[in-house]
Image 1 (cartoon, rainbow, N blue to C red):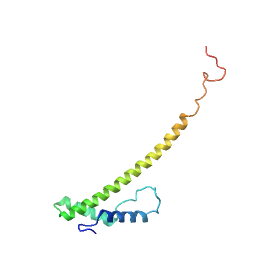
Image 2: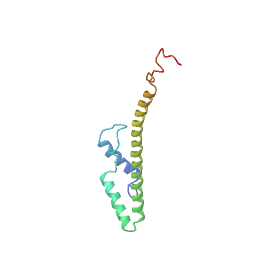
Image 3: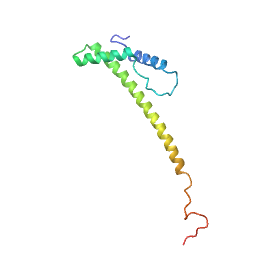
Image 4: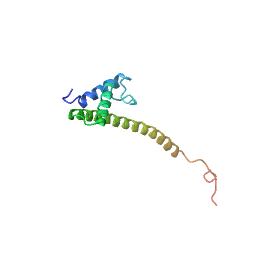
Length: 118
């Protein structure tokens, strides 16, 4: 632990430990389980509530900022993952659309063999 509370690396290590124990070690699995461990989330909430009530010490402010940075980082990872999954769905629909667009056009009387233009 740093002088003003846990470091970002220490918190992220606990986040990774919790995430790893919550569902295996799949590289690109959905990330809804990625979150602060309960003790860290409780400490973040405690510091935030204390800050709303009035002044907090510089050490508490630094600790609160550390937790907020880690939470922001987790939120960015989740957002990136969500966009990546949405893009996969989009890419799949895009591929289907491309397949439809590259099919030969349906036959119409104008394009049937033996049709003479007048």
